[in-house]
Length: 61
Image (cartoon, rainbow, N blue to C red):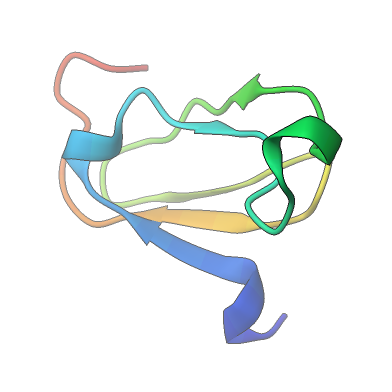
């Protein structure tokens, strides 16, 4: 995996969803909500982008 496939998000970005960050809205994949854990990471099942949460996911799943 290279750095182009990893995005760092903060607690302010929650709830986390992906609709294809490399695409325009009209041609992206369906919006997928991703259940990320505090200071953890999760991969989008559609496009493979890995999201890393820098912080705590208080009150979010």
